[in-house]
Length: 323
Image (tube, rainbow, N blue to C red):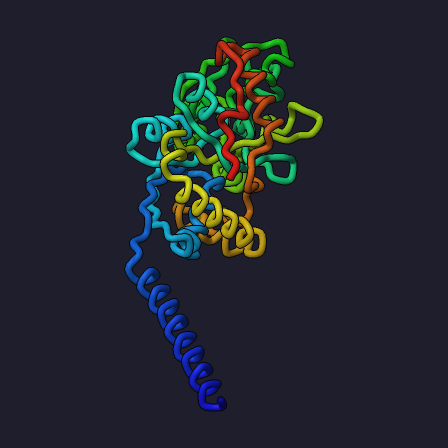
């Protein structure tokens, strides 16, 4: 009887050992032979994209089985165009350019967000210190540097102008890439620049320039705007849900890291945007969120309707991705 029990125990031990060995072998095989999934992402040369830089540098994409390559674009509209054309899989773009793309028939899905408020200010109208322009009421007929007519800042600019009895037609608008705004202000070829960080802080530190008005945080009592988001086409999302969810997990890790490592994040932004660390450390930065604020996006849709940017309402619930 004892021998039978010993035999049974031996069999159980042997079987257990085989199972454990098999599991270890499978884990080793799958982890060493599984190829990472390629993901091509576009970004803009602004601090909002720090989550992408961090996720890449800290290996969070790799941990989620993603091989991510980043391509820089001039602005959000160009990112949206590239996503629609399939030259990239997804990208970081302004929420307004994404909504413009949706209104134009591009079936985009939005996810993640950055936001601005008085503690995370990233945008301002900048003029020369000796400019005769003392308030927004003085801007009529002035040369105004703008990086795009399809972004949130230009939408908000129209709200600001309206409050002073002006319209966009009262400005002499020149479309100039955001990275060139310091150059044209310094050179005197424009009177005002609708500038983003890091260029706002760069001009203020250089001296001889002042902020005429902060725009994004001067419109509503909550002083809050949701600003940028990650976009993919609906077709890509439907066919690659695992990739999207892996991206969102990596992004969540990056946002947690950013919160705990502000100085290291500034160094990473400086590296990717080819800026001085002290400049990046001093300038305003957005807040980062894992999910879009639906109400904030809806408010932007309503303004776009009001100013004729889109002709029909957008059912944003169909374009906000939820895992």
